[in-house]
Length: 404
Image 1 (cartoon, one colour):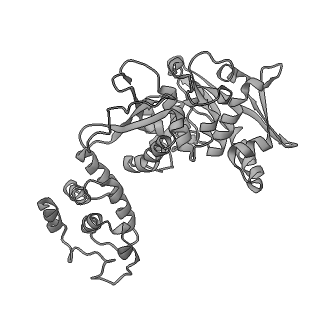
Image 2 (cartoon, rainbow, N blue to C red):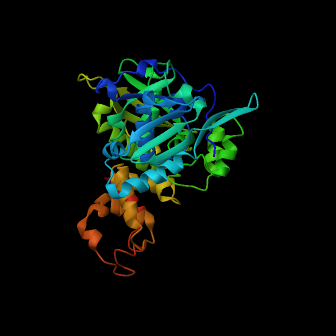
């Protein structure tokens, strides 16, 4: 199994190396080469890798240069909060997956590539876990002098989803001063991610699937290649921008912002689209690097609602509806996308014939949050469940929304 990492993409993060909040013994470094790798892994695996890297300077080295880190089982239990009954099973499954992953890069110009089995051995015996790294990875593990980022182990153990874990790593690895990436007046970094590359980096799309890997291995990483790789994947999770934003980006953002000790605050999320009404092709994150001392709040806030973008997201969410119908739903909700999403989810529990009419009424009154409506039983053709255009004309409803 291979993961494509493109040679020459990694930049120095020397300005992002100081953790303000934690004891220096809690800090570990991770190469940006490793952070930018495209692979799918569990939260448990990410935590285990972080714990291993925090102890990399204690590793024993074989004559061939292979590094082995040993960790007491009870230390893993304590760090992860594992229950005794689940510990061995989780560790067994995680170790098996980690020894199957590779990292590397392809250089199509010189028709060369390199792939390395990152973890060549994982062993648990007599209450001790031992993980052995390939000797060619040593420059990316020990004595790092450039192209790396630092992390607090205590913080990394707090993340509750693998997407937040990986997203936070990616943010920190790119938070360094570079032309056009830093807004000094507001102390914000403008971080742009290709949406398909982000899905591969977060493991939303598994880069190790044969059909995906075949495309990634053919060429340098480009937006076109990432798009083809994502399209080739049989996994279609979060295939629309709206689902991806709501269930991955927004959740990760909230978790990061709810933990100010992590040293990062996200102030806004923007998108880049291929023309008006086109698909979202890139995500722009506005993030602040926090200091230990209280800081004056940055003046840049989330932008005013982009109604065209909201309409696109509503159409992505609901599907086969017209622009003016999506606009009517948005107007009825006060352009509250969360309200629209929960009421659309609610519509799936009902026998709805006219989805537009249903949604206009539902979001206006927020039926999904109404105990009265949520408990109401089906009454047949003229009842609430069978929402019919004969009883509710969405053209009239749209006109009503416009008047108000």
